Image 1: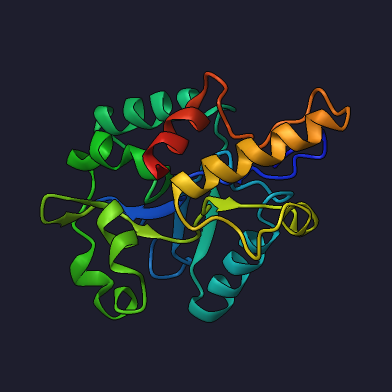
Image 2: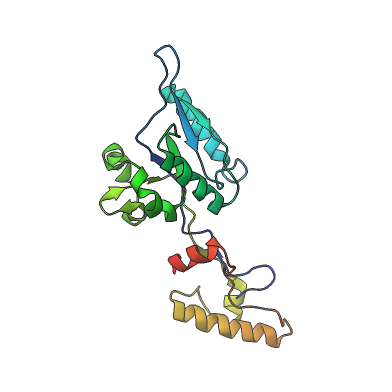
Length: 212
């Protein structure tokens, strides 16, 4: 059920950005404000997540703790390599890390178990989401926001072919997409596709597979 306007597609990724505390914290003298260094990932740019800057400002206003955001390279693979290099050196390092959900197992050994520190907050988070950041019995990180895969569809096409709602199963999706694609191509739209998705050779493909 898709054409050049991307009628039906899966958007977002299964990966979720999150905070994870390390065992160290930046400490100043009692006469200086406490500063926490934050190494965030590429998704956390002002354009994509304008609320992050405001959240950090609110945090500082409420706690008096300053947050210093550190520069990072572009691209998830470059960022993961940098995170591992910093953590393996075991020297001066950031206090808080933003990581992709699929990094949890890779970086598990470097992070604290966060369950004792976020017990009340976790009660309002989906158990499935919490499980995504749990390695064994250890909660590696806590979610700050989630990119959730969704199905976008055209109600006009569904009505045109006699469907009263979107597919509820993969089999229904396949049957409906094939029928609508065939019908639209028969009308002259030779490049019409019934279903499009993130199939490029990139991290998006891995995340889409995990969603399935």
